[in-house]
Image (cartoon, rainbow, N blue to C red; front, top):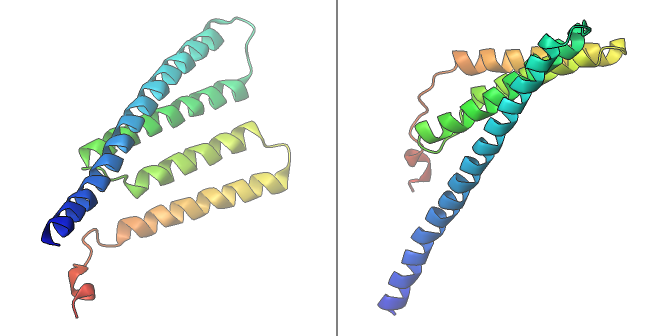
Amino acid sequence: MFKVKKDFSFVLRLIPKVFQTVLNVSLVFLALILCFLLVKELIIFGEILIEKGSNDYKLFLANILIFFLYFEFITMIVKYFKEEYHFPLRYFLYIGITAMIRLIIVDHEHPINTLLYSLVVLILIIGYFIMNITPRERPDSKWFFRK
């Protein structure tokens, strides 16, 4: 009976490690793909700059913001490994704000949609502000589980 319980506890400790390894390997592959796409975006950005007849500032700004989206995702993956397997919430907010600003720049034909997009940006900024004014240290949750 004791051996079965001991083997089962070993399996329970092994499962999270296996999932963590799969997640880490997947994130490394994702980071490599994003790096490739970032370089591709730099090449496209260079072609837009070199092209003589290109005065489309919307395309120019959209490509810059796409570049920053790739950059922010790569930075978030790097932070994940540096902060011991934790995604900081502020990076998700940065990405959301950048994505919404890109959407406002690219798709601003309908004023109602533009207003809604700007309200989303405002909500994300308010969320970021609230996150920064709250204390980073959380109370120890062990007291909650004591009986």
